[in-house]
Image: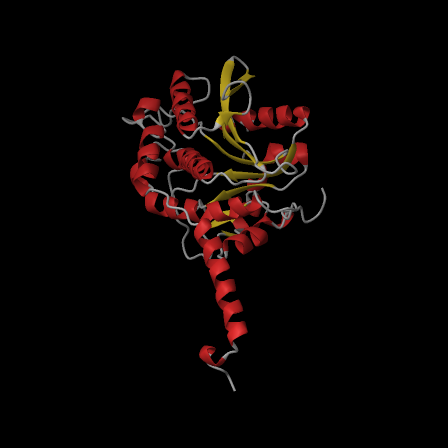
Length: 322
C-alpha cells in the first residue's frame, strides 16, 4: 500500500525536506535572468548598417571590436593577453580576435580552461547589383557573439567557477577559420590545459519540430550533449543528421581547437537549413531573428557551462581518442 507523505516516520520526513531544500537551493543558484531587450540592443548594434557587414580587415569590424572590448570592460573581465586584441594577418589583411578571461577560484583547477567562443566577423557586402548591399550578419554571427557576451556577463556576476573561462570572439572565420586557427595554435604553444571549447554559431531563430533547443556538431565525438543535458535537467543539445551530412564539425571555429588539443571542441547551432533562408544574404537582419528565443536559450545554456566549470573531474570526454 502506498503511504501518504504524512504517514512517513518523522526522521525520514526531515531527510526528505532537507534533500528537497538542497535541490531547491542548487537550482536557485543556477537560475539566470537574461534580458530579451539587452539581447536585442546588442544584436541591433552589431548587425547595423553602421558596421557594414563586419568584414575582416575593415574599419567597420574594428568598430565592432571596440564595442566588444567595452562590454568586457563593463563586466570587469580582464584580457587574457596584454590587451583584449589578439592580432593576426591574412595576406594584406589584419584581423583581431577579442580574448578575455575569468580566472578560476579553485587552486587545483584554476589552471584548467573552458573556452566559450563565437565569430564576430561577416562577409561585408553581398548582391552588389541590388539597392541593399550590406550583409549585416545578424544570425551569422551577431547572434553567437551576443550569446557569448551575455554568458560572460552572467559568469562575471556569479563568479564561483573553479576552472578559468576564456571568452573569445573570432575574426577571420569567413576567410577559412583564420582567427580561431591562430588562437588555437597560440594557446597550444603557451601550453594551457584546455578542457573544452564550446562554440556558438547562428542561434538567432528556434528550430522546428525538435525535442531539443540546439544541435551540437560532431555529436558522436564526445559525451558533451549527454552530460550537458544531465547538468541542465533538460534536453538543450541534440543531434541533427544534416550536421554530419554537411560536415559542419570541420566548418566552424571549434575545429582548430579540436585539431590542436584533441579535446571536446564542438559548435552549437539552431540553423537547420530549413528555418532561416538568409545565410550570407543581405536580408540576414535583426528583424528576422527571435531575441526572446535567444534569451531563453542563453538562460538554459548557462547552468550547463556553470556545472562544467565546477566539476572536480573532467567529465566531458571524447568518445574515442582521435
